[in-house]
Image (cartoon, rainbow, N blue to C red; front, top):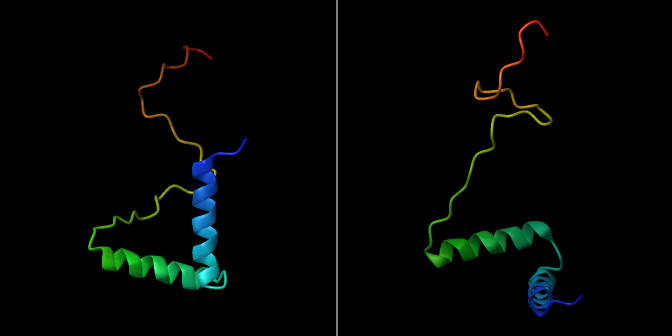
Length: 69
């Protein structure tokens, strides 16, 4: 199934990457420079403190286990 919007985004992305010879560091620097020039405020989130593959612990809102189990 072809989606014209997805096709256009892929063409634009490929043309942008080709300008930098597909060098990810150069592409990243260009994007960051464009962000600065835009005058818009961009938000950056710090990584969470959760360790990978850590099972979340119950917060007390769950149904308690039956007594004597």
